[in-house]
Each structure stands twice: as structure tokens, then as C-alpha cells.
Image 1 (tube, rainbow, N blue to C red):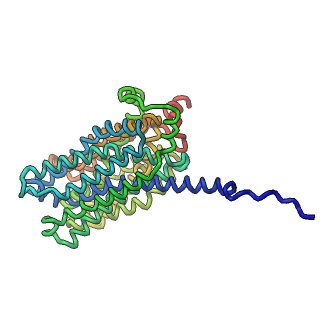
Image 2 (cartoon, helix red, strand yellow; image 1 turned 135 degrees about the vertical axis):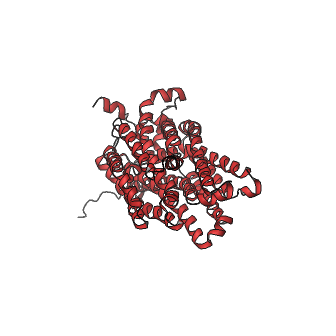
Image 3 (cartoon, one colour; image 1 turned 60 degrees about the vertical axis):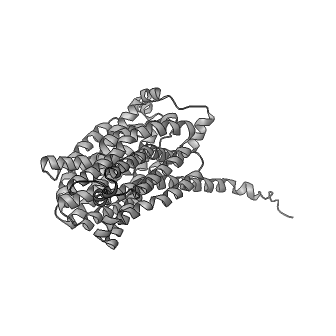
Length: 451
């Protein structure tokens, strides 16, 4: 007798769940790559600008070395003053039309503006037209960035699983440091290969040219992505982005919390990443190559620990990670700045430790901030709060640090400024609800009120 056997399942039926799961995972990985590459393009620009500021200032600004560098740092800050305007334009657009189309446009504007900086004629050739063109291009860059970061973080958060949002979101900041490190390494590499005279003459322009292919690759990846599942569900349900006035009124609490945390986040960020090469060279007395290599080593260590910190935030929460970082920096920043002043070895150790103390904040940005807002206002609320605070306190940090040293003669003033920012962050953290593992459909402030 032949034993009864059920009919064989068709391959399509048998494999459907696994295939769908694999497809979803592949889609998630593409979303991570598309988001992170745009962030890398943004920070690539910051890296080459920060590491090439002595060459840029000499080529495009008048005056002695100190005056020209201060002008260049102030121009760097100007781009941040335009970011709130960009967030007011791109944020509502992203909540109405979707995240994908906005992110495709912002990466084109960012990379195009960076490329054009490398084509500006010198001050010796066109006079004040050179700094004027630089200011205009930095404003374009800032306007596009006003939508880039909020959109990329929202895109990443809405694709990531609720219980692993910290881990996957950390790769957005991996792109931040990778882009900055790549730009910094390019500027450093060309300065070592070409020498000081060639770099001042024309070599500083080459790294700016690399932005064009980076932008095209990012545009290709983003154009192939689908809109986020969360946004598609909202659009299918007929929910619409609120008008700006209602958005600001109904999301006042999360926007104030984000703005306060961003004061700490970006004062530390831009002081460490953008201002540090100038600080180490002009204030500590390191050789130009030494001042450039220190942050690169530090950022490589930070990149290693970003996914670890993101994963840990999924297990223990975002609030403990932020508290650890803010208190650690508040206690250790002055001693570590004093350590950096002892020479090259001390500068490397001090920067690495400062960077590792900062990692718990950096790793959890895109998991923490988007989850504080409802889907219909997520892009707008996050982008506006983040960019207003960044424009006032983040992008200005290098110029403020340099000006404070000039006014007081105290080389530790950037450290004191970072401490003040961390105190603001701790005050904001008291009002931030925990969002680890929570659905993006939840209202974390309402949940906390009823807890």
C-alpha cells in the first residue's frame, strides 16, 4: 500500500514568505544606502571645507592669515543661517509629496554647490566677487541641507523595524563620518602629494570636484527607492500634512525638546569635526599635517562604535545613551582639551576619547528625533526644529570658539562652550519621552502623560 502524501506545494506558495522577507530586507538595505550616501555627500563638503580652510581663505579672501581664516569660518557659518529657510520649504513639501522626491532634489543641489566652489576664481582675479560667490554657494548648500538631513533621518526611521531603529539609524551617522573622513583624507592626501605651493595655487580645488560623481550616485540610488511604507499608509488613509501654523502649535513640545538636544549635539559636533583642525594647528601649534590627521584617526574609532551604540540604544533606550554622553562630556571635556594641548600623542588620545563620549548621541539621532513627531508632520517638525537650532548654535560653533579665544586669550574656551551646550541638552533630555521599540504611530508625549 502506498502511503498517502499531501500534494506538493507549489514553489511560489512555499517560497513566498521567505522571498518577501528577503525582498523587504533588501529594500531596507537600499534605503539605508540611499539615506547614508546623501548624508555622506553633505559632510564630504564640510570635510573638505574644514580641512582646506587655510587654502580657501588664502585664495578667496583678502587680509592677513588670521583675518582671512576668520572670514572663511564666518562664511562656513552663513550656510547654516539659511538652513531654517530650507527646512521651511523642504519639510512641508516632504510631508505633502513624499520623502523620496525631496531627497532626490536636495542631493543634486548639495553636490552641485560643492562642485561649483572648486570653480570660483581667486580674489586676486575678481576681487570681492570671489567671496561673494562663495557666500552664495554656501547659501545654496545650506538651503538644500535644510531638507536633506531631516528627510534622510525620517526616511531611514520609517523604513527601519521598530525594535532595531537605533541600529539601522546609526548607519546614517556612519555616512556622516565616512563622508567627512573621505573629504578630510582627500584634502590631506593632496596636500602631502602636491605640497603647499601647489595646494594654494590650484590643488585645493580638486577635492571639490569629487562631489559631482557622489551626487549622481546618490541620485541614482534615491530615484530607485520606493516611498516609505509609513508615508504610503498615511497617504492611503487620506491624512494630510497640517498647515505650518497648526504644525508649530500642535508640535511645540517635541520641537522644543529636539531644539534643546540639538544645541548640545551640534555644538559638540561642529567643534570636534569642523573646527578642530584649525584649533590644533593655530592654537595648539601642531604641524598642518598633524592637525589634519588627528580628527581622521578619531573619526575612524567613532565609526567602529556607532553601530554598537545604536544597537545598545535598542536594548536600554535612547535616554540613558544621551544621559551618559552629555554627563561624560560635561565632566571630561576640559581635562581632555588640556591633554590635547600636550602634543600629537595627547591630541590623538584626547580627540578619540571626546569622540567616543559623543558617539551615544550621534548614533541615535535618526532613531530618536523622528519618533517624537506624528507621520503627517514628521519631516517638517524634525527639519524645522533641527535646522533652526543648528543654524544658531551648530554652524556658528567654529567661529564662536575662535572669537572667544581671541576675546579672552583662553585656549580652553571651546571646551567651556561645549560644557554650556551639554547643560542645555541635559535640561531638554528631562522632557524627552523614551521611544526605543515604540511604533511610529504612537504619540510618545501622550503615552508618557498617561504612564
